[in-house]
Length: 267
Image (tube, rainbow, N blue to C red):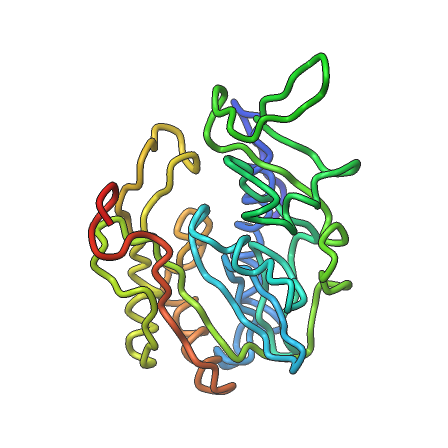
């Protein structure tokens, strides 16, 4: 962290670069602009997507990979700020990446038109099968891995907010949980105490294709919906989130993007 450098060994997976930078930001941002400021006034890194509506209402979507951050934030009626990594600071919200890194397995224009149409010259497909003679891409090909991806700049999304920042503070905080047991309701409005419980526990599921060896949803707990990238204790980030929710009056919801009425394979 002192040298602000990282070394990646044994893989060429682009996600390692992206998440390495995010880990560094998880260290630096809570110290900004000064580490002795109250929690509400310091910069909070978010493993979350963000968009903004016509009335300048910012929505934040927390969640692990594959639980809906990219899909739900790519709303044609709202401007996309970013799909995965942001910072909520005293003067609003900004995107860390300047681009998107979306899953492509089973991708169709009907299901996700904004992402599908963003795949053109200038985007990079990773682990995606294609016909070497025709160049035709097969988004259902998982022969390499189910973790097939595309990276593209934000400007490839028609309704992207450029530059990817806003001086407005979030009005809605949405915690995305992929419930593999089918117990949680589709959507729940949370009290401040419930927000802290779900944010710190981070109950969700690992989805097939997001980690090696994961072939079907597996229940897991990931603090702050981003445990692998945290540097400080989870309570540091939770304290900052609680203080910002209190200061700016944002409403919080728990949205189940997994199964309802029965577990995986039933619900």
